[in-house]
Image (cartoon, rainbow, N blue to C red; front, side, top):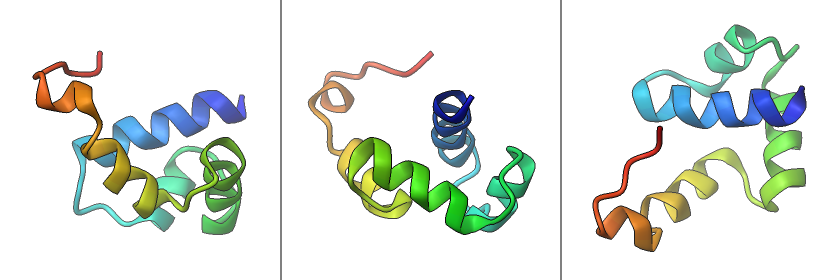
Length: 68
């Protein structure tokens, strides 16, 4: 369930770049922002913003691949 919520958080943030992480955490069923951060750190060793920064520079982005 945490992995699904993590993946949904990434997709939601990409679709709503101006939405804040706290609102997204609540929308996805986390109790607070820190639970979301804990999952990001556990799964990626990065904070949510740092992960998205690295992810946006991933090679597949340069080749025009989009996430489905």
